[in-house]
Image (tube, rainbow over all chains, first blue to last red):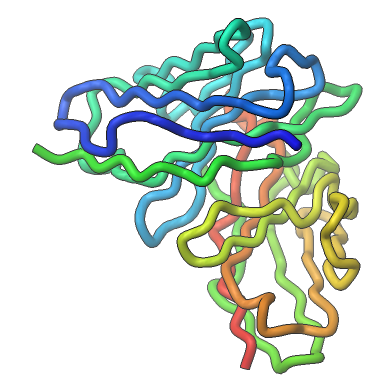
Length: 124
Length: 112
């Protein structure tokens, strides 16, 4: 079965760039049925969709983060990545990667599975 | 971005049924059948419980069911069990501005 695992620094300084990678195992990222997704959850708060990428490289980002984020995919390593620039304390959150499920309409109908999540703290 | 609206908490006794609502707009829940529900236990990643409004992924108990009426989607948990306690989030595709996806505010389910 497909599993996802986030990796990256747990501490980032304000104004720097947060970089995370999600490794997909048990299945190929090179699949036209899925969108590869980043979602975050600030401590004690709800979920926020950050954006997703198709294996071809097409990306869709949250408007509130669009000016600061970049999501990329590497089909040779079965990984996709998130970069979030100019971070502040408000970007402190658990960051999850997840697989977005689609059908013939190519619209995401749900996210499954999810990685275990990684806490990123923005602090000097 | 505007989150879908859920009640902060819902409680019930073991064996009872509870329903969690998720209210959106005509740009998301009201127009599209791409509503999903997730269960999250403390310190764990969310788990998909329902997708496409009513569909259950393989392995999810049939005590969980979804429905939709107008701009409001609902998740019903029948035969409530202690293990059902946790946070529940709805989500939906949205055509609002350039946003593609939106989550609900979250509901804490308390088993009395």
